[in-house]
Image (tube, rainbow, N blue to C red):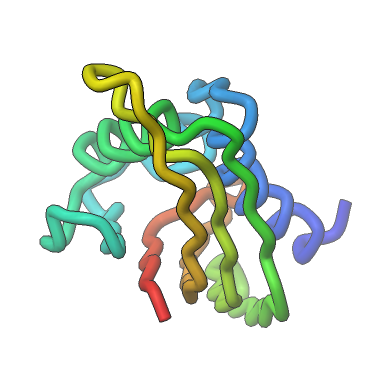
Length: 132
């Protein structure tokens, strides 16, 4: 598998966790290191570390049923053992309120930037998700 294929597959694995609800890969594909960081389009809006990011990702993905996503127009730039990937992101699903037994359809048109490092496989070191 080429670096570009491995990089896009790593990012797809991130969002596939939302579809499959198999959250274990989230810990495997992200860099468990103090250098890791993330920003998201959902609160809290502060810069998050690895542990907080994982917890919020898991919470987000389990609270959306029928989750689906589309990565559009990815631009992958590789600089030795660092890669920057920017793309348009469409996310859809049903936000579920388990206390009220209700749901609300959501569709988010957004943008995403991922920074990956090769250690020895490509791992996510930073990501930033934002709504358009």
